[in-house]
Image (cartoon, rainbow, N blue to C red; front, side, top):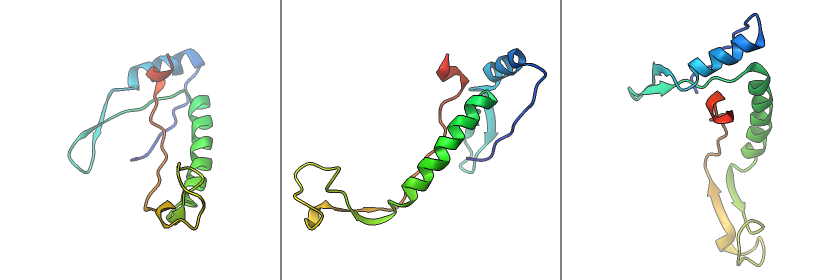
Length: 103
């Protein structure tokens, strides 16, 4: 994620039209030299998705480290089973759906 911007337009119809034009358009070049694709959403949709994203990131942070996943895997009797232990190095969450994905 390289950042975000909020644009305030005179009316909702103009905002939705602008989202349609910007969503999927070519954006800046990333660190690897690849051009990124812009993601555009109406403000009310983006705000709701951002709130869910923040809650999800908080939950995923708790998974970092070595944990027992016996509750989520078949065939483990309990947390004491050494095969149920898994290392989680990084869990991520992000908004990946733009305006065109909701049409």
